[in-house]
Length: 67
Length: 354
Image 1 (cartoon, chains in turn green, purple):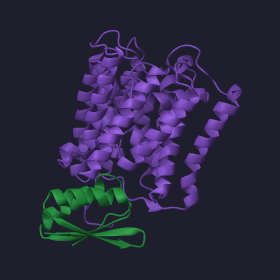
Image 2 (cartoon, rainbow over the protein chains, first blue to last red):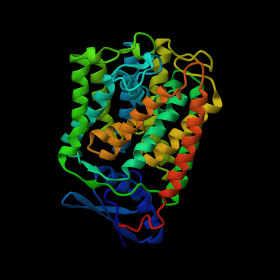
Image 3 (cartoon, chains in turn brown, purple):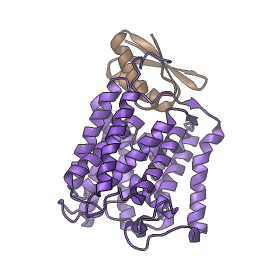
Image 4 (cartoon, chains in turn blue, purple):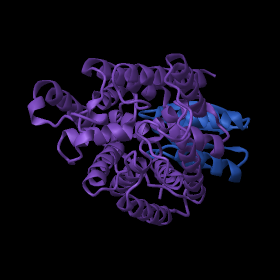
């Protein structure tokens, strides 16, 4: 599953991730365009017991969230 | 917990700065207040005619520029725009109507609590209630939509306007209005206020300090990172006030405050809902405006416009209490905010691009 959360303000990228993980508990990929969203999602997913791998893509960050 | 530490430091800096600014001339429990200061700035620019609250506040200039410089150096200056700007303007306007009913933004609410003003506890209960209503809408798919990257130049506009404000204040004061009595006449020296704004603006940008976000994340995500900042501000300012002898516990006779509990509650509840819809409290909107977030620039302009209307149409409270016009405006504010809530629920929220 892939979520494009670019351009959304706080706290929507985290909420989109939260809802996404509820549907896909195995993990998913989230694309964000700013540090705040990146850090917030990393923290949220980390608190839920997921590991997050960050890939820089031009101006954006692809967050690979896995169990 | 690197992030939490940074937020805690930001809270301490905000608290100490607020104490210092009061010590050097700002009104009591008003070391920093985004709503009050935008209102004073609107008055200084002759956008409203309330003589006691007219002064271009250097703190506002500093907050925006501090955020701007730190965002630039941290590669976080990313101009973007287009997330429901007209709706955000209206929400900014409504935030100001609610804040001027209560007499303070959420930050001043915290400073008032830490000064012993129990009316602000009533305001806090309202603020939390408003945030919970906002979270209800968020959980049902509320979104103001995506923002898109714009040219760098667009992001420079608002910081440059702040420089123009500073030039006006220092170089051409004859063009402006300055309160001779009342809160607007009480202020720390320009240089100190400016530096205070720069420091707080910088650390708030770095830490994402936000009064509404702290409570929101605690309820919504069980994430207490930003909430730490909230607690630290309260502690630092309360201890500071006790040490300085300026802690004054009770409801009556509080500085720049009134005792009408119902309207203190409703005013801050309105600020709470609107702040959640906007994604951050008034301080956070100012910080984002310095980072190139044009939607937040529009929000700040909405707040300034709301402040001007509030005083031109007798909607702002005074220490004597709320006005009938203000009460009507707050009720209309609730209707508009709830309508905005329902109009912006997107069923597919979370599925990616619309």
